[in-house]
Image 1 (cartoon, rainbow, N blue to C red):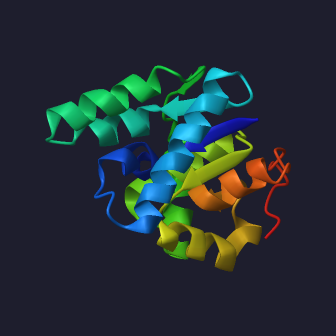
Image 2: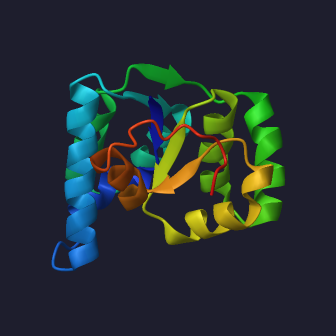
Length: 158
């Protein structure tokens, strides 16, 4: 399965781990990395992820996230059609960079866009018929893996 992880997923290990949800999501992210390393999933990254990560002023964090990007088997550049799609996605309620990640994910037809941003998932669930990629929370994705539903590619099923 080809997956695109939102930057917040890559950054989860750097968040305060004293909150149960954050600690669980960090473990979930590490589990996904293990699946990628074993070849079960193909990680897709983009210019947008690299750009967003490069804006991080914390050098240690920025470099560590860049090291995660090296696990990706597919690298995608931004195209004009992505920028055009961003306008539509913003009208649904997505913020600029989130809309760009989603537009890229749609165009390259990843099986799943994974995020730990509740607002992205909320907007997706409200407008899933207008969005051409399946969006799952980090925990939803991993729950599907653990429960044996490893093929999460059923587009837009909510």
